[in-house]
Structures are given as structure tokens and as C-alpha cells.
Image (cartoon, rainbow over all chains, first blue to last red; front, side):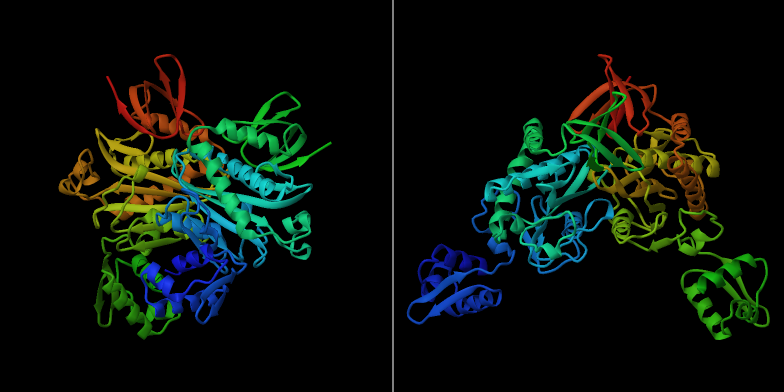
Length: 319
Length: 319
């Protein structure tokens, strides 16, 4: 009901709406309306209450609340259900555990901060409170484990497009799972899967973006969107754009239109065409980054002419 | 302490040991000894207590208790920690959740019954109380998701060898994950993994064996070891042998000696050399089962001469 009342206030935020009207429209008592308004205020909504005029929404809080993210989102799958936390260990951990309990595909888990934010291979992801967008999406694509790289690739394209389209920044992809602006990292992606031998049961796609993070709060080599733009960024708007992009790009995977996604990826890639060194498990390979294959693996031609298909690793451009 | 007392009683099961001796050897009070003995009795141990003589272990309960499984097991990794349940939903589910909480490699989870025993692709595994061996092992091999099939293959070899060596039955492997005696299934294997793109975080290897299961309690097409032998089988002894075999075969994987494992698998295979139909996702392929590859995938040559490498599917031999 709070969601309904908030929606009504948002739709009429240029005017006052009377308690009676809300009560009438939403079929609740005026006392209930008053109580819900108090709750919204406690959650950080600035709502003006005037005798004889009614209520008017002045300002929403700068918090990643489901009602804020869902309002005007207009997606069919991604973010149909949103679960938010003020603080959690890692949204990917929550996502994995919810997915095991059969949470629906497209469920988004988001937190204002992560106390144990995760990167690839057990690395950490710095997730200071209120500064970034830290979320996970539960996906259930009909893929084999070998194809799971498609999801990371899809997500890196979606993040780059959302940043480019919303903010005009030149976001690029460093294979396999980072989005850069210039020479600094602004976003990391961690896909975790639960699978049988040949079938992925679910994938939890985790995305962390440094949005309004200050220089001091960032690790070396990282930047934030605010640092790049010299002004704060509306996290809700950016996240909405990103969820829409994920929905679009994910459809390319589920509708077997992966080549189109590969083309977008190639356009944004920082890695292709360069001579690189790649650390991958206990091996290091040096060669030319030629392309990606249909599983999202990087194709590297070494100096003996052999082509390697590498699913994940640490890349360094060499000169 | 109960484990220590039980061990002492087992080592001296052909005679009486006095409470005083136990108390002295294990540095506990005689009252504590008495209490632990009562606990053991409540857990189904038959212990004779004679004034002036002491205690003597007559019989252990027919239950899969950690102390029973661990006694004389002599493995270095598999079963170093054993967690047992009288009943649980699925030992694989428990295993996954413990592995996420960083449970050690080799941890065994076992249950007298499973109320939601799982097979491949969301199928169920009938797990009636006290009749079978239902357990899961947490493994952390340094494999990529594409190599996870090696674990299923390893387990099917270990189960076949344990049944052959302990009971003299001609256990064979139906690719990818079943062990048969004659034309009936006696064991199913379900490997589930949690992985990043290129790295398996952990694998939970689930094994269900119909040991003393009656004909009425079995689904069609299934058999039990008791039905084959016309007598009950000691579940503890069989499980111990199996855990030792898993340790041996698993070493072949971690020490990069997979070809030796493949040879054993070929020897036990019901599938190789036959003309088969294989259902795999939405496709069906008919052809000759030629071999397995280095990832545990079945190599099938279709009638156009193309070789398919198939990681998982439903196989039927055709004539």
C-alpha cells in the first residue's frame, strides 16, 4: 500500500493531494493513509502536509529503495522484484542463497554498502556506504557452464552503454570483467554460477559501480563517475537505465542473437588489437588479442601462431 | 570424549574394560565415563556393564554415525570430517550451503534418509530411511567448469570399484552418472558446482546407493545390493571402502593422472561401443559411442561421420 501511495504522490508531485482523495482512490481509511505517510517520512521522504490542502511529495531520499528503482522502470524481467539492504556482506552471496530457494529470474538484490564485497578469484570489492551502486541479478539462462562467459560479456556491454547514454562518458571494456574510463576502473563484474555438468541452474550477476565515491575511498587505479564528471550522479536514474540495458542485452543471449552482442563488445573493447600478457591459472601467455569467440572467451595468438581461447584471466597490455 | 571412549571400547571389544581404566587412560572422572556410556547406549550402542568387570561393547547400531564411519577409515582427505543426519532434505543442499561457508575439502555429509533426494535435471532420488547410503562430499579441485565432468566420472569409477571389491558384484557404469548391476540401476551420482567463469569454487559430489532397499521401496528399473546378493550388506564397511576409493581416484585428477582414470572408466563402461540415442537439451543425436574425452564428455560419431562431444544427457542403447 505504501508503494501505491508513494506512486500516487509521485504522479501528482507538482500539486497537493488530499488525504480524502488518496483514501478514496486506494480504498483505505484516512487514518491508514496518515500512518503510511508517517512511514514514508521515516524512510527519508520529504512530504509536506498542509491543512485543507493535503500532502505533497517534495523530495525522495538518496537511497536505493525498491519503490524508487521500480518507479518508471518499465522492464519485463530484470528488476520485477527488488530487494534492498542498508548493509550486507555481499549482494552476490544473498543472490546465491535466494536463487537456491527458487527466487524468480530477474530478481535484483541491492545494498547501500557491502561489508565483504567480492571480486574475481576471492578478491575484494570496496563498497563504501551510499557512494556506489552494488547489486546482483539472478538469471536462469539455458546455458552450459562453458557459455557462462556470455553473461559477463553481456553485462560489460550493458554497463558501458548505460554510462555512455546517461552520462556521455566514454566507458570501455577491459576483458573480461571490468569497465574503465580512461585508464581507471569504474566498474567490476562478478558472475557466479551454480551448475550441473552440462546445465547452469542459475547465474548470479554482480555489478559494482563507483558512482559518487570520493578519491580517498577508492583503491589505486580506480575512479568514480563523480570524479570524471565533477558532479554527483543520480544513482537511481543510472541504475534504471542499466537494468533496462541488461534486459535488452540479455535478450540477445536468450534469443540466440549473440553475434550482435559480440559486435557491441568489440566496439567498446580496450583489449582487442593489442599485444597482451595474460595470467591464467598458473600459466602466462603473451600474444596478440585477436577477437572473442562465441562463448565470450578471448582469442589470443601467441608468437608461434597458436590461437588460445581463454575464458578468464588477468590481462596487461604490453608495448 | 565419547568418540575416544567408543574407540577404546572398540579396540577392546573382546573383553571387559573397567570404568577406572577408561577414566585413567582418557583423563576423565568415572562419573563422566558413566554418563558418556549412557549416551552411547541411547544412540543405539549395546554395551554390557558388569559390576567388578566394567564395560564391554557388544554391538554397534546399524546407523551411519560419524564415529562408526571414521573408525578405521584411514583416509587423508575424504571423510576427515563427517556430519550425519537422521533425516534431511538433500545432502547435496547441505553440502552446498556448508561449502559456501568455507567447509573443508573432503567433508562428508550423510543422512539416513532424504526427504527431497535429488537426481540430475531436477529429478528426484528415492532415499528411504536406513536402507541406502546417501551422502555428499565437498571437493575443491582446481578445475574449470568445463572439466567438472571429470568428477562424475571419477565417482562412477570409485563406486564401481568399491562394489566390485567389497561384494564381488559386477558393477558397471552407464554414462554419465549411473552405476548398474545387470540392467538395473543401483547408484546415482549428482555433481553440483559453484563456479566463476573459469574457476570452480567448489563441487558437491552427491552419491546415492540402494544398499538394503526392498523391491517395493525401489522405483522401476532400480535394484539394490541386497536384492542382488540375497543378504543384507554392512553399509559402514561399504561406505568406508567407497571413501577410500574416492580418495584414490580423486588423486588421479588432482595429480593430473586423468588418463589412468579414463582407462578404468572404459573397462567398466556399459555405453562405449554401442549404437546409442542421446537426448541432450532440446536435441537428440543417434550414433556410435566411441570414447570419452579428457573432460569426461562422451564422444559420439553420428551417421554423417561428425564427432560430438557431449557433457551430459540421457542415453539409450539402440539395436
